[in-house]
Image 1: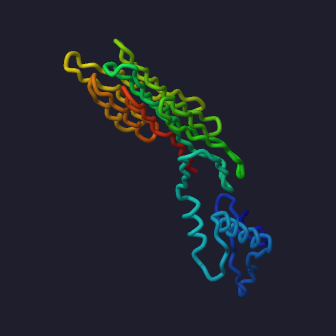
Image 2 (image 1 turned 180 degrees about the horizontal axis):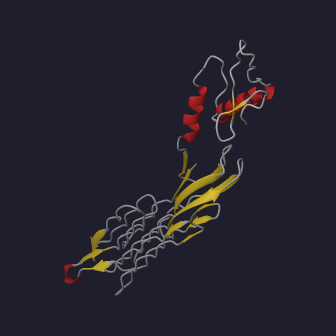
Image 3 (image 1 turned 45 degrees about the vertical axis):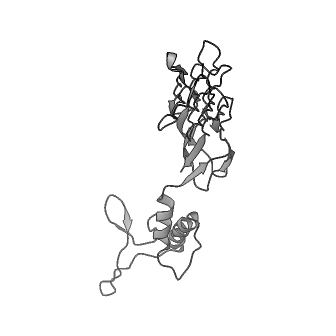
Length: 261
């Protein structure tokens, strides 16, 4: 687009071409109204309306404002499961936030010596340069009982899952699982380590290790006795580790990916 480019323009300051009124009495010609200028103005405005997903309508005089509001409003897509993201038209940059899944709590082969909690998934943020129409694979990590948390990936961003809590055995509590690492991020926060199991001496009370937080509070420890087994508590979403136990292990919280443009 350009300023008016027909004959008889005037300088309206700093070399900018502007319009001149016609004055028939004084013999002053007005600025020539060219087809090139009019077509350029039309296509700039129509392009703005269509970029916002609107259909030009001669009876709607508010479409330019509607288009600006639509195009400048924050847009977001949340991934709770794996899939793919197609870059919308006219978009060249994305902000991505992702959490890896939390690790499972550890179990035990001895009711008196509980397993450790699961580690939290890593968290990362990145701004990516992209091309309209580009298809980017998205993998969302899931928590699985008895295993490390799965990694969440978006393009080059990788947020690994938290580690499974250590197993308890006679005379030994399980250690807490490690937090997940992060690669390819502008902001990378390694997941928190979980705590180990606890034995309260002669009281007979035992606690599984607390699952690490994946942004929020840590999962509550599972509590039992050295004569009655207990199950683990599942990790919180997104990316929290599960608590340790002496019976059935619980999964960590699932991962998450959020895309903004």
